[in-house]
Each structure stands twice: as structure tokens, then as C-alpha cells.
Length: 290
Image (cartoon, rainbow, N blue to C red; front, side, top):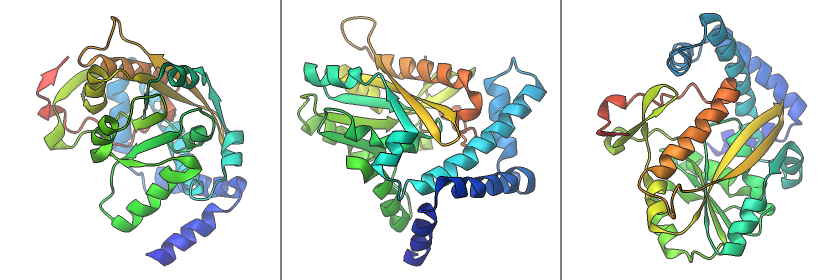
């Protein structure tokens, strides 16, 4: 296993222009030869965009596979990419939200979705006044690769946290404006965790509620992270405060507002979302709807 990782690491050190040649090959294989999850992708697109024609959906699907192939080699690059290169390739906009939260003494819950390439905004930790940035990740079953993927999340001054440890960590960490928790917040809950369902992309969608519960218990700042692919290998990230309608957040308010913001992002660039994952596979297990 370690020998395989050494090979992965060696390939990740290749220049991006060479890795994108690999991406083109991956696209050809998964789109034209293997047909990786093409039925799942098309079904997700049909349900999410009922107003679009079959031809429009096919165009989005093909562009998705191009972006997905780029995502794969860019994730590979994440094993070795320098902070300097990431700062060139990823432009971070609206960073005042971090300075303001720091000045107000509020820790931050940063929420993003599976929009390409969410693995590349981690150099943010070197650009904000907060002392600790803690990306939240789901533990993999294979302990070897779990450790290696964690090295990506720990790069560039981050301190990754396993999802099951987050609430405990938030409650024991002083809420003083010095910590950012970074969630990819549109994960699909496990079937035994499905509880709440909301309307998202024209579909009843199971959602996690953990970060929402924190919103009603603690006076923290909530920030939406919007990824935008400018061109191949270059991204722009915009940060927006998620604010309550009243004096403070009520139950499920952050969940609804985050998914609405994410929906707007997806509608602007639909080919840039991870359509190959089965986000709606546990819809029948939803107990409560909003």
C-alpha cells in the first residue's frame, strides 16, 4: 500500500499541464468507454432541472465529466502542491468576513458544497487572522488511505477534524474568534442518520443538521463559501455571511439558507457540481420535512 502511495506522490509532483493530459485521458475513459455513473448523473440532472431540454442536460453532463476529471488530478496534486502555487491558482474574495468575525470574538462555521474544487481552498488558513482552521472530514474505512487523505486536509496550516469529533471540539474550544470550522455541508447522511428533508433543486433532499444545532446554541459566525471555476486550474472563492432573520438563528434556519445559497451557485454553473454522488438515495427514510 505504501508503494502505491509513493507512486501517487511521485505523479502528484508532475506539472499541472502534464496532469491535465492525464485528465483528458480519464475523461475519455470514464465518459466514452466505461460510462461511469452516467445513468446516475443524468437522472440527478433531470430531477434537478426539469425545465431544461434533453439536449441541454446532455451538454451539462459532458461538461461535468470534464470538470470531474480535472477534479481527480487536482486532488492528486493536493498531496504535493505548495501554498504559494495554491495562492496563485485560487483567488479568495471577501475576506473581510474573517477579519470582522475575529474582531467580534466569534468563531466561524464555514459551509461549502461539493462544487469543484473544494479540496483547493485550504490555503485560506494562511490568509486569515484566525489561529486555527479545522477542515471537517468523514473518516474512510481504509485506515491507510484515511491517513493519507487527512494529510491533504492538514496541509497549509490546517488541523483536520473527523466529523464525529466536531461538536465536542466546538463546545470545548473558546468562542473567541480564533477558530474556523470548515464543513463540506451537503454530505448525504447515512441511512440511520436521516431525519430532516428540505426542498433542494426541485427535490425532497435529506440533509445534515449538526452545524444548524450549533447555530442555535452558540453565538458563532456562519459563512458560505462559493467556489467558482474561472478556467482550467484556476478558481475564485467568494465568502458571504449567513445572517439570521431575527436577532439570532432559529432551528433549521442555517440549513435552509445554506442550501438556498448552494442552489443559486449550482444554477449559475451546473456542470461544476458533483452529480455522480447519490445525494437522494435515502429520500424515503426522511421523517420530517420543511
